[in-house]
Image (spheres, rainbow, N blue to C red):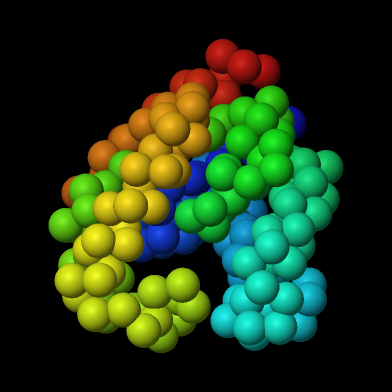
Length: 173
């Protein structure tokens, strides 16, 4: 009965790390945003455009609740997932949560070239992006800090994280 939830800001490496981690743990990997797109047959930008952020957050919450019924998963949550509804409580009560923490500078470096896939930052200049990320991190950090574990996203060693998680899973079984 194990679920590992990766949380953190967009661009922190939750999906990339999650896929590798799932393979090392012999778990299934789920990218929450991709699952929402598949389930609702709309891209995240389309959902934001047609239903707004509130509509997206409702879909995200419902999708997260459905995942709680499954086991042996590594789930890469969206950057805002832990900040809405009671999602963080659901995450912490139903699995192990890991906050992949990154600095504003590192996030800007990663996101400045990947803006078109992310509707809330797609039209921002680099200066606007830095300011936006900084403001959002200030708001979200209180939620992220409630994760059971925090790791540094820059130079993250997935093998080390996998060993750590395996030990935690053995303790909680």
